[in-house]
Length: 274
Picture 1 (cartoon, rainbow, N blue to C red):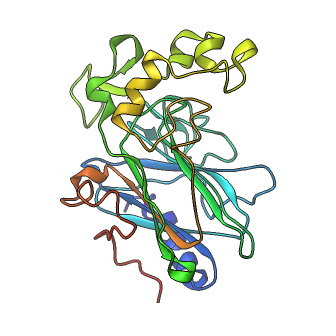
Picture 2 (picture 1 turned 90 degrees about the vertical axis):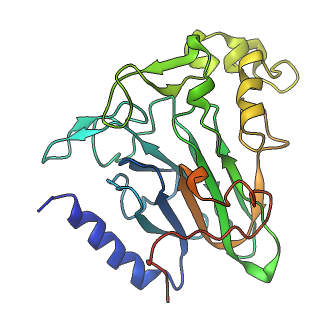
């Protein structure tokens, strides 16, 4: 019996009893291979029930949060961990541990970012490619307070297939051929210049403008952040009971067709709050 089955079981049981009054993140692996989601809470926010776990193809896990929670959720790929949870991942690694425990994702990584509103305050959320890209990702609010329409956002395009050579992260693993592209770095990470990193003299929206490289990301994923000051078309607001976070969403036959609609329905798992 795999030791990785137990954390997911207890996680599901915990969220089942708390989902009636908490905001929920439903994380789904629609990729044809295993991923290892990670979570990082912002300053002043408590950790979620887990900060890192294994998620096999076709499975979903629900994580509960609290009003005002802020943080990031991402997926790691190409991971190996021993019985103590020590190991490494090809992309998204967080300190070489199964549980990230306060460590962020090593770039390049596709990120879901959110700050939940308290009371009647709106949630602010986005999908960011500022730290590069490793997997397609779609975020969809569900159970919206007051019935108002809220937007899906994300990046359903496989940027790795068209990543410029100078940004490619190449490596062999269990789901790609040896030497395949497993991630696409940001120009900031690849070259380290102030212009690409929006730092130094470029640390404001006037001087830091879209670059050739950020435009590649933006054309592929119009609703995702492509560089630090890409706010106008990349930040969304809502007030929702639940957020579906789906990795490799394009495998859903209608995900892209209905991407612009406020009510994408996903055939994910039977882990539904009653």
